[in-house]
Image (cartoon, rainbow, N blue to C red; front, side):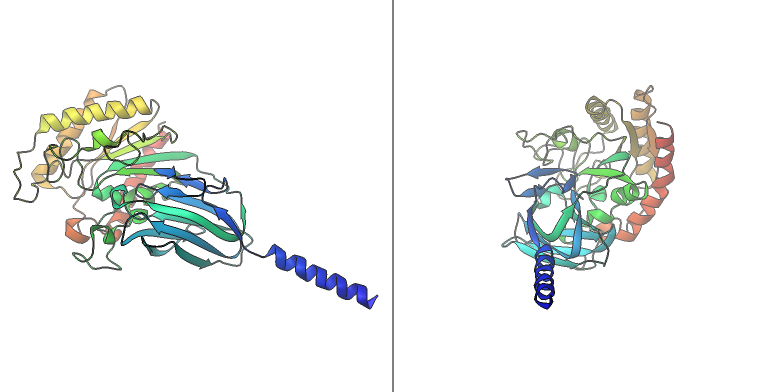
Length: 361
C-alpha cells in the first residue's frame, strides 16, 4: 500500500510538472488577436505596421515570454500591457530577436497586449513567438470601432521623452502611439481602433513639400504600409463606426523656412478634403465621419482651417458630418507637439463629442 501511494504521488508530481512546462506558440496562432495595420509575413511571423497596431491574447501561468524584433536598426518600441494596465515602453533591437519575460499576477488568466509605439514609417515590429504555459481564448466585448486618420499628432509622435530627451536620439525615440489621444479615447469608449497616420503628411501638401517629392495622405491611405506601395492594399476588414480625421497642421505649416513654400491654398485643401471624405464613404458606406481641427494651430490660421472644414461639412449635407474644435494649443511635448499629458486632455475633451456621435447612429 505504501509503495502504491509513493508511486501515485510521484506520478502526480510528474504530471503536474509536465502541465506547467511552457509551450511555444507562433505569432500566427489563432488565439492571438490582431488590431490595426498588420501583416502575416510567414507561417510563424507577423508584423505590426501602423501606429498602435497590436496583438492581444489571454494566457495561463505565472509568466510569459515574448520574442520580438525590430525590422530596422538600431531600435524600435512597443508598449506592453497586462490586463489592460500600462506596463512600460520597451526598446526592441533590430539586430536580434529580443526576449522579454513578464511576471504575471496570480490570476487564473491574464490578458497580454503588445502595442506598436511608433508609426509605419519607423519600420515594423515583428512578432516571432510567445512562450507561456497555455494560451486561452480572448473574450472580446468591443461593440464599436473607430479609425483615426491623421499626422504626427495622431501618431503620438514627440509626446514621450521619458527615456530620451527632446532633440536627442532619433525621431522615433519620443513616439508613444498607445498614449496618443485616439487610443486613449477608444479605450474610454471600450472601442476597437485603428490608427492610419503619418508624420508630416497633409491633405494636399506636407510639412515641407508641395506634394512634389512626397505623397500626401489621400495617395497612401489605401495602401497597407501607408506608403506608395500599391501591391499591398489596405483590405476592408475593419469597418469603423466612426472615422475621425485630423489633417491640416502640415498643410498650413511654413515648412523649414528654407525650402520654397507657397501660401496656404484654401480651395485646394478643401477640394482634396472633399475627395478624401468621398473615398472614406466609398470604403465604409455606413460610417460616421468626424473632422477635427488641430491642437497645434491657433488664431487666424485656426479660423481659416475651421472655415475649410465647414465647407467640407456643408458639401455632405445628407451625411451629418460632425466638427470638433480644440479650445487651445496643446504643445507641451517635443518640438511644439502635444505631450503625453496633453494627449490625455485631448482624449477627455473628445469623449463627450464621440459619445454624442455614437448616440445618434
